[in-house]
Image (cartoon, rainbow, N blue to C red; front, side, top):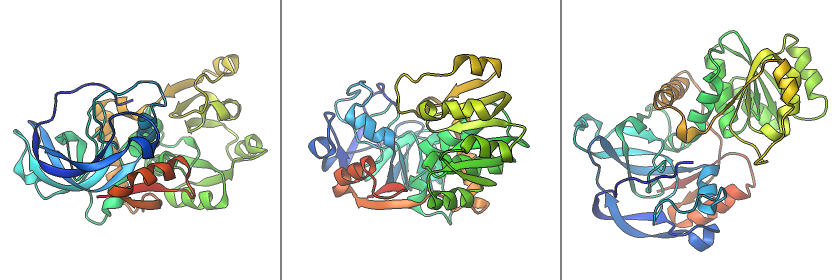
Length: 338
């Protein structure tokens, strides 16, 4: 969940930031003001943030949706962002200064994320952003791309295999479609609307299906040998469908569910020798995060257009940005510009 403790970050001059010191509703706990800017320590870089991406996990941490409480006295939210490296700590080459980067894990087991003029992260968590990719797209990466890459590859190579991405137009889903396509899989994506089908197709899906009645039969028609691997956004809602369409020895990688204690068709899974992997982006192995970053940059270089942006908010309007993500008026990523 990205909760834990770390040494206090050394402080510098003042910067503008958003933070909360208690959990609750966005308008009641989020504060925008001045605080000391961070100074990079050994092995770290400091990034002058241009855009900060909001993920559902950022909202849930602020709400204390999982009951973990406040891991630090003050939290600057958001783990993902993009900007320019402007300072480096001991042991980091000064060649990093001036580079356009996107970062991940800024508020993973750390108190101060990207909803501020500056953030510091270990240098391995700062990834060069290809020159043609806008900063707003860079701020959309991180949690969705790491989750998607791990969900696609956790069970092994997907080259030449049939992969079903449930929810192929969401942030993780669309990225999973692209990464599975890039890895040589045949990709089937389920979607909720015709607009979502367009998103999944642009991401590289070979087939798109609406998530309505008769889904099992339509999947079987286009994949009669069965699905080899499923990337699952709604484990509790879709497990019955998943077990019906998986091939013998298939696998599921799931990263979300609405029910905290979902029921599963145990014996059907056993009889089909199904493997289930649970993917939480914060605790994906470090080397897998590096591979994910490399893969998503390669996807952009190969022509992927990235994520749809639903709305942009200023840092002063961060409470409204969180509320928009809680009750979205349209699909797409929510960005805070700094």
